[in-house]
Image (cartoon, rainbow, N blue to C red; front, side, top):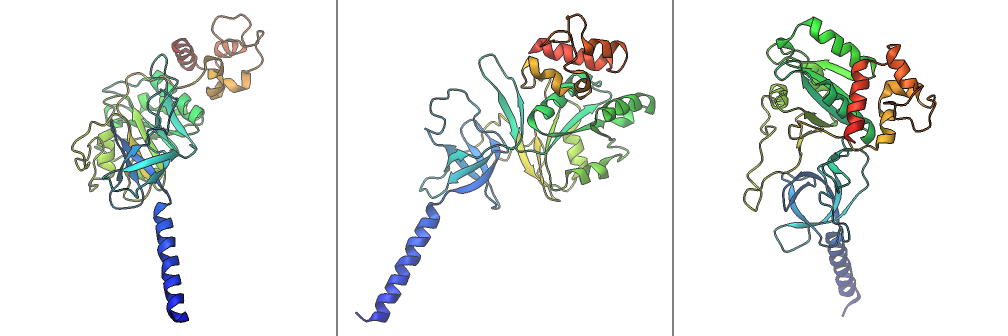
Length: 322
């Protein structure tokens, strides 16, 4: 065989081997939605890929919900079947987690988000300060930046809105007042969502879906709707769902929450109430819970109105629930 022919064959074989090797390399993607049996993973294509978990991925760990929406995963799509395989989960940068039940350490609702959008209506349903405070603790624990959205401002007056806005602004939380009929705050919110991964949370009925519909009226995907194109028929969504935004970034919708217990140890709770931090370490008793112990610096700060009664009640209620 001529030398030129040998070189061409050798070059062709190398290209074939390289191509085969490239196909075997796992791809990295982001979990957009989880159903009971499948995960929808964004790998930069027009449609997410349907994937399953390798049977031995969580071997020895009996707890469910190992993979959350927002997780970055390595997947193998070089298979003859109709679904790929999730091989591993990459380390999480942030997480929104709650304590779901006795015996289960945590339920991670969303991972790797940057902003927690806490939607709270002023009326219908009424403002729930305790639930907002619990979300603020969850944001602090998980490394997310909180943004409080006071929705349905058209149903309230300035005298009702101002104290709430001032109170949470003083805690270092960004507060945005919105009204869909008046188009109030929508442009500001749209800009805050740009090129970020944001989690939409709040009590049932506060107007999350209406808010997103007002922000993106031409958006072909509506929050709360589940795509029927699953490749396996219709599945019931049991977790949050992530949607790409028209101007860049993602928003993650979470089911309406009536009660929320953030994942935090009781003895560490005080560190996640920002106005408590200045007074910590000054109580008479080490490990003070700030509830019934004498000579408690936190309780003295409440008496002196350096900490509000409402926030202290939120702390006590959350401590007792933990």
